[in-house]
Amino acid sequence: MSTRTNVIVSMGETKIILYRHHDGYPISTGVDLVDKLRSASERTEQFVIDLLTDKYESGRRIYEITSGIHGDIEWAYFINVGEFGETTIGASKIDIGADRECGVLRAKKAAAPISQFVTDFLNPQITKWNARMAALANDPRHVHDALSMIDLLETT
Image 1 (cartoon, helix red, strand yellow):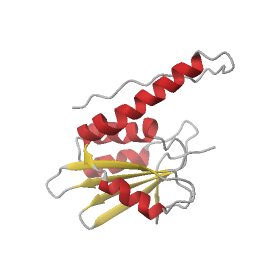
Image 2 (spheres, one colour):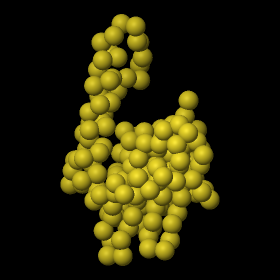
Image 3 (spheres, one colour):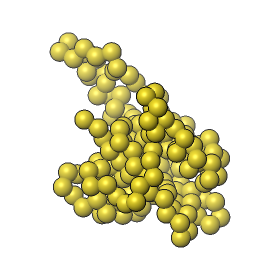
């Protein structure tokens, strides 16, 4: 089953809403957003271009522009680019049946500078993922080739 997510990029009065159908968890989408923000040197236009041109192996776009918050998302990410170029990012898990707009507001409220987002949010998520993968790898009932560990992100 897919883990759907919305990514809201806000730049002053401009707001772009993106939808991602697969891999919305922080260990995938959160890491991807931070990597793309850093690669674009926080240049907003390049960041958005990088998101919109990224594709799965099948050729399908990973991120698509959408007109609103989807009704079945499990994660919301909020990226704000301030008028002087400072960028903040936040994320929020959205429980089944919960108000999606409230989840987006929680992500917006949680937004922090990129290095703080990595330290306080992403790296703990990655640590939990790695512990889960280690437990599954040691459990003979679970045989899976895709069990992989993820490196913690640099905070700078």
